[in-house]
Image: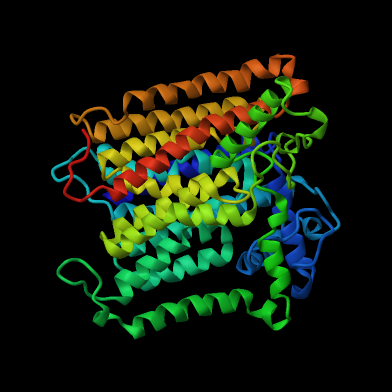
Amino acid sequence: CGFIFLWCVARCLSDLLLICHWVCVSVSHSTDFEVHRNWLAITHSLPVSRWYHENTSEWTLDYPPLFAWFELGLSHAARHFDPDMLLVENLNYASPSTVLFQRLSVIFTDLLFIYAARECCRCVQDQKGSRDVLNRPSFVLAVLLLWNFGLLIVDHIHFQYNGFLFGFLLLSVAKHLQRQHLQGALLFSVLLNLKHIYLYVAPAYGVYLLRSYCFTQDNKDGSVSWSSFSPLRLLALGGIVASVCALSFGPFIAMGQLPQVLSRLFPFKRGLCHAYWAPNIWALYNTLDKILATLGVRLKLLQEAGLPRASMTGGLVQEFQHSVLPSVTPSITLVCTLLSILPAVASIWFRPRGARGFLRCLLLCALGSFVFGWHVHEKAILIAILPLSILAVENREDAGIFLVLTTTGHYSLFPLLFTPAELPIKVSLMLLFTIYSFTALRKLYSGRGSLLRPLESVYLLGLVGVAFACEVAFPLSPWQQKLPFLPLLATSVYCSLGVCYSFLRLYASLLRPPGKPKQP
């Protein structure tokens, strides 16, 4: 019965995706659309030895090799739609057949995400005696995953293959929840070789598998029993990781191109922040630097001529220097990131709480990397939002954190769709998802008090004011020409507060002693 209803939800989602596809084809052509068309052309038209050297387009291949093999597979289907899309020199090529293929390829690969959502729903325990299928945790989780607003606009309007990738992540998490650790490790190894941004959560996987799989027993006090270490299990895990990496990187290692591949995967010269700032600690840091510089000039403490140009608010991907505060280097962000995730990783080593403790650690690793990472993309917030959906339908406190993080994180994606024609689409879709999230979770935990604290409710209501100012008032104001980056800055700064707050609340729930009751 649960599978039938899940299938119905998946079918409804597919219908919605198709509708959005036809509505948005004529509206939206993001840079990522051309990025992936170019990668189709590179992998199809050029020998493997030139894939990571080709630079005819500015959108060079900068994903791990396994994703390049994936693009190569897609290209063999693409040639039946329009072979001209596979020519490297056809920059910004977007024929109707090309658009159709690109959109359909995303919908088709989302089948993996639908299957992963089903597996996650199987890991959730439904309330005994509950006859209302629509209010069961498994059904609510299905809707939260399959109708996720952020994933819908990023993949099917903006254009990317995140649903396909998140399918691997959620399926890997589900396998660990089902105690099928080798399958979970294999799926994550594949995912890591498809897109290296998932290095964010690799520490959670590594420590959890070492502690809870390679060590088979605990002492009576809960500490690790060193004598229970299984070399065979460690070899099995190592063999899985090495095999996947060999299939992915092997040809490039054989050609002596590993340094070139790595230089594409980790381009540290792109700067601290993306062109559109992700809502993290560095957005707050940049804003504080800008405020201090402005005050310094007005108070005649600083000379305006001696300050760096306002490149960090110019919407460009490049390195820049802060005006007043110390400039941040990649090594500083790495140290901050490691320090931010260290307590979470240490917790699943010294105080393991099973697969759900691992899932909580995964969320903190994702958020810690998002909050303190170098050149973070705003879309990376989905790495935390989607897995948090599982905990949200099982735990009341997590449901409150989910509502804050999801509403904030989803609104932070609004600037990705910036044309007037896209405004009603993104507003309608977010309202539908947000209203359902609040309604379903409140009903799931009815009789146990409000899911949100008063200040959290006030903060989320503030998003309405920010949205009106950025989407309606600002385009009509004279500031649009002088300060075009202002709405992006306001969105990033306001959403940074909610993301950082959610990060701290998740940490509090992890580090709280098991015997201490949770707040009502």
